[in-house]
Image (cartoon, rainbow, N blue to C red):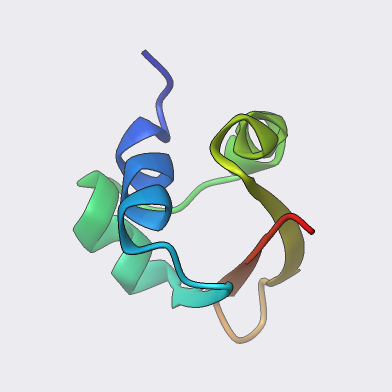
Length: 68
């Protein structure tokens, strides 16, 4: 099971076109602090119909969008 599986399940379940999630929201979903490992795991998103769009370390959020 992927480290970020709870996040992938969350975006697939709620089926929105776009997610802009704060690091705190990600922590609430996954149970751990957002970390740089996300950059390795983001390649799993297309399997769930989504893709990574943008990340702001300064403002502490990540954007995930539905694949077209």
